[in-house]
Image 1: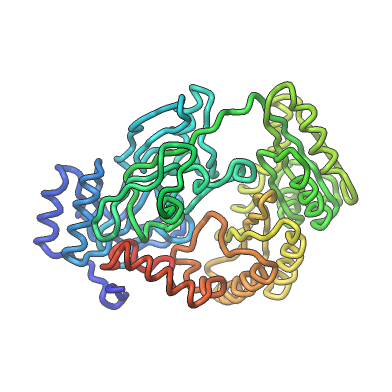
Image 2: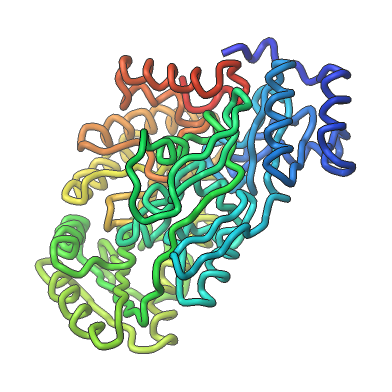
Length: 468
């Protein structure tokens, strides 16, 4: 990589800025620190001020920006709405932030062929609203769907609860138009439901965190909305009972459209910081949603209910109307406010393990919490074993920060020991790059770096991310 922290220069060459200004129309280039400062952070709470911010509105402008950055060896950091948590949108080496926020057009909408083509700055919720008018939806539904962009969803392969049934962005993107780090314009994928011509570069770019190419157009696969859905809540006496139920639920013919998990520590936090009643011996909770056609929803719900029943079940409830649905979800929604009340900061990881080993993971996490005297709260997408591990810490307590760092290292060791992976949808960014060698072998990592060099020979795209 041509950029090193000690060589990072906050000042850009005047010829570069002059040519960049000519490549963009008036108002699309920001250089005043008062304007650029807000583009230096993301949801990781890291902040490094960029030297300039480019606000392109077309594929051509993105191409011209990348080519200029190559010519002058200027680091370029792509950015959507900066909702990512591992620091992927932070411009570590200053340089230029390329914000896609103004590339927010729907380019082509084809409900008859079940796809929509959009620019990367389109908000996830806007895609859902557009497709919903004709009875369709795009599968990815991250928590930040109301304000995160499609480009950001693709950069991190961000999915959400529906992934358990409908898949992640990688399974729901047909094709891309992009510009590589070398400034080459490429198209990948198809507009059809099948296609196997050449290598699958679409799936390679999705999840690459802006290190290979910048997406300028995406063709998204649309799915028909279900006629109805049914919400259920199951409370168990311990994590092993809940994990066994998850395995049973995922083994029967009806795949739930959501299967969420909350552990005992999280339930205790809700109990202590809200007015929501729950059984005193509640040790784990599952939120389950089933969707489908009206005529079959009762039979589908019965299958899932039977699978959820078993040893350790304390309470099972099924919502029959919108009010009851909201009541069942209230316990899950009370968790985030409780977390903010208990700790001023949290380290949030999104590990994934086989569903059969969830109990082993959570039990191990409890042991690590005691060993390092760190409060750990676990919840997440149980249907695919994607657990959000939250270490609650006080950033002013240096000893606690040191313990948390050691604890995190052992958490990742535990995840890999039970055949898991270090990230399901948050990505690597800055925060996890030091740990990537725990999961990726030297030979595989070398191949990844060679792929990076082929796409981005100058190393200008999102430097300092992903690789250790």
